[in-house]
Length: 295
Length: 233
Image (cartoon, rainbow over all chains, first blue to last red; front, side):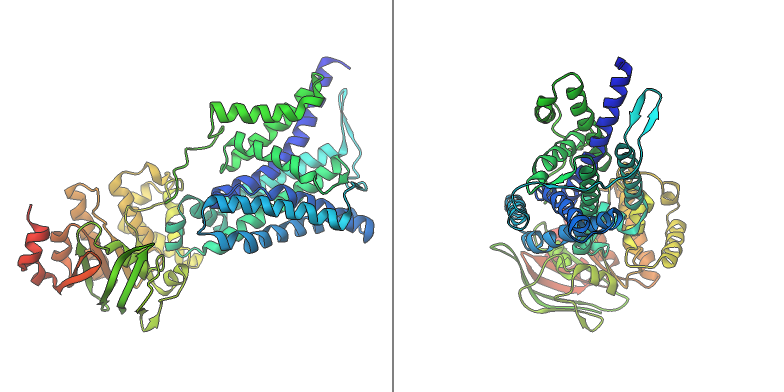
């Protein structure tokens, strides 16, 4: 294989994982933007999505399409339920209580999954059945292709939603000034729930795409995946939607780059070194702004 | 139209509003004046539902809004233009106006936009501009227009003249008069007592969470206490 071929195929690998990170990072960033919460249960929503897909394909013998839709619905519902049950009662509480609750929910979900499905990983049946294509000397797997297309389409739809729809504009208004948004007649609770729903739906999509590439579901799979997406959100500037996308792709490409030069054992470390560098050099991230403390 | 009856509001241990009652009748301009910290803004926040009173009641058009959620109070026809304008800095001028009309349907929004752009051609010129880049005066115009977009029956303005040059202050008060002539009832909170009293039908003077004086605008301008406290210097 020529150097060029290696670079291109690693780039495609990077874009593939990067787009999954980006989808998940979007949920972190949107939720942070609206209630200033680092929702550490977000990663575990991915795990629940993966188990749902597995359950539908293996236990209920459904087609991958049905399983994918079920995974997305389950993630969305779970995200909103967590928000209603765990975060809404703490709206007036200090932010630290909210953060601790999020971590608690994360443990709860992981242990519930372990209780129900056992600690071992479940092998995931094939989700994407698309033949690979060749671009000159580079072969692109069907999974990579589908992942990229689905992610990009989701992101474009999200952009449209936030920029054009009434609910999307309400999200931006609440995220900028909750009090003023209330005075406009915007229902804060509904807007926050909607944000969680959108973020969790994206995590559901990410979960299926991730399971297509790494075909297994395990109780702790959301941990590392969630953390990396979180790093992506911080790199892009937490609270920024385009930042989350850029951050996700950067992290994916950095990981692939590390593997390409023979440091694949070190690729997790590379991600966290990026986090440390961002926090030292530019804590607001690439596109983040200095958030004033909300009063 | 608006009846506020014996409200008591607390910020934690601080008793900010200590049994205030007042009313605003249909078609009036009512001013609340008083020094910094007298509780003027808190009164408006309580009416619009952002703060809650522990006692008493607030009625609007004969219905109790004491426990109504803020977004439903807007729906009932109260617009609150908050202190410091609080426009959405990162959104465009037109998006700000659309947010003001959040409770309206899209046909109504187009109609209101047209009216606002007729009233404030300046905002029409800048409709695609990010609101944070507007000047202070333009931001105040935007804040008031945004409030108007909900077609309010009662408009509550909190310090609309704050931080504006004298010529702009006059302009803001002219706009308030225009809105009033068009049939909107106005509840105005101001530190600029002179201006606030000159256009008010009636006014209430607030001091540390209590109403200490009330009367028509003309009476209060002449009152010795008000002169001493707010108009000299």
